[in-house]
Amino acid sequence: MSEEHSRNLRRRRRENVPGGRSHPYKVLVSEDEKQQLEALAGAAKVSVQRLLVASALAGDRGGVDQQRENAAALFHIERLLANLANNINQIARQANADNSIREDTRVVLAEVRKAAKRIDATLDQMAW
Image (cartoon, rainbow, N blue to C red):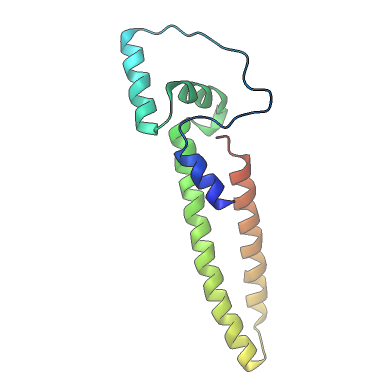
């Protein structure tokens, strides 16, 4: 799943939808607005059309740049969780060697699982 979201971060065009998109809108802009839109789209590495749609439909989530920043932050957190999982494996190896596990370790593991599920759910809800 993480690879799919990463690929979508780099994608300039929006994902195809069943039935296609059959409702065009025509927007007239001044030369200055055109240059601004193209600069913003170029900086976000998306088309002007995608920039306009994503920004308009984002609501409180912000525009394309904000969505990318949010996704990058979530992916960073996901990587930290993976590192944490490695540390937990080391703890488990030690626990197996002594045949014991501390109770607070179980609590921490449960919290890590909940955090990972929240991150996955948030990534799934983000519009691309």
